[in-house]
Image (cartoon, rainbow, N blue to C red):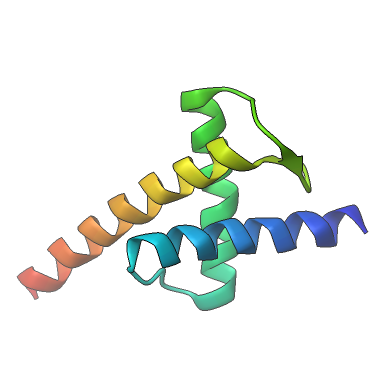
Length: 84
């Protein structure tokens, strides 16, 4: 049950980052889960481990890290679309 909860929270965090920035993550639900996981790692690396924990994620650093990740991905994807 812990793995399912972790996947759900990763998806929700990725979805919230996508929603707050108004930019799409490629890959749909799987992309949201991956963005949530990588964003949680990035946020914990940059901001440390603090705030409420749900499903093994520190919510605030994970959300901030996911927002940074989605912003970087959207800038990279937009730059590659212009050149083609």
